Figure 1 (cartoon, one colour):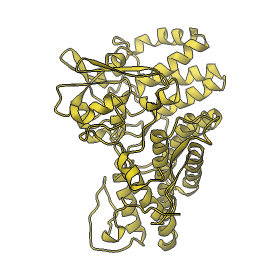
Figure 2 (cartoon, rainbow, N blue to C red):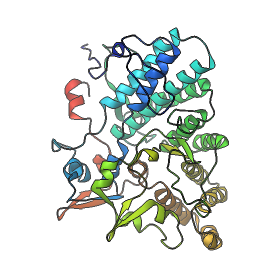
Figure 3 (tube, rainbow, N blue to C red):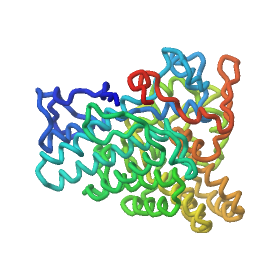
Figure 4 (tube, one colour):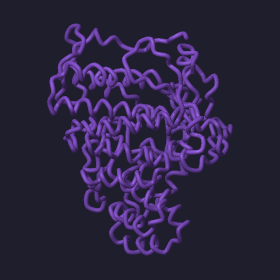
Amino acid sequence: MKKYTYLFIALITGLHFTACDSYLDIEPQGKVIPETLEENRGLITVAYNGFPTHKSRLTFRADELVLDEFSIDAAYYRDIYIWKDVNPDSQTAAYPWVQFYNTIFYTNYIINEGQKTIEDSADKNQLVGEAYALRAYAYFDLVNLYGNPYDEATADSDKAVPLALEIDLEQVFTPVSVAQVYEQVLTDIDRAKASLVLETQETGMNYRFSLSAVNALEARVNLYSNQWEKALQAAEKALSYNNSLVNLNTDPQLPNRYDSPESVLALEDVYEYEVNNAAYVSEMLTDRYDKDNDLRFGLYFVQAGSRYKSGKGGAQQFKCSIRTSELYLIKAEALMELGRIEESRSVLLALLRNRYRTAYIPALENSVKALDNNGYATLLMEERARELALEGHRWFDLRRTNQKEIRHTFNGDVYTLQANDPRYTLLYPQEAKLNNPEL
């Protein structure tokens, strides 16, 4: 059988890495294959740095943004916005593929080769644990971009993405099933938990994985695959390391900053500056908020004439992959799905008391407690949409829940993503298909 190489891999023999004391502080210093702890720490920092910033592009596919047709960047996002995935314009911003597998390559090197040459120590264990966790995160995002949403009935047959787990430049690069990718993600998470030493990372280094972050990732993975009990357990474990919430009544700061008490993993720019310049917030999103009582509205959105721009991203301080409020929402959703409705209400209210005006809380509590199960389920998902707005969750949440119809208007033309449209799953990038006929 013909084999296909990693055409996209940067030569690791061309760099010597210096471990960083601050965010992404890396300096080339000659030519050497990484062997020491310091050199392999530099290698994983390159892997962190190369993790794709793709989620703001996905936001254009959902219902949170309106593309500004007069923006100089409109051409980059137009075909994303109208779901033109077949033969998009050459200017269209690409979805990541090579970048993911570059990151995976670096983690594979540490897992397969670095462990052999690094002297045993707690720092080595921490590094290897981070490599497993970062690989898990990369594959989790890949399967949710290019594989169908997890469905227990079809996951074994639904085609997803190739798994590359070793350093083998002649590896057969064949896609495996959605179920196999999820299984590998959870295996890597288990190995990460067994190796990681640090419960949390200090501010400024919290782009790196910790026990808190990998348990939070496990909660998200199990949520997406409808493993409610496991999602609950992982969320509770992650919250045991950090359950802080910013009370917007007393501390009106954006909770998605990298230096927020809520930060669990601050790896990604989930809402890029260029996207913010090219888009307004949709009325569908702003209309979700109680503008008199919901304190998030005044923080999340900035008035721009008669419309709104996002105040949640577009700068380095807004690196945000996972934060504690997501864990509260995962816990509440898992409890609800397990039939533990009153416990779920209590968890959700613990979050909402930090988001609504203090004077409004008694009325809010009464209204939440008065809802029947269906009404409460609707409220919970609405609160998830409000809390995590423009943080890269909405597209994935639509995929895993109702895959509703969405309409976008551009230059007077209306484009429709039908309910359960196949375009809720991305096509493999054309360049990747040209390089690998197995796709």
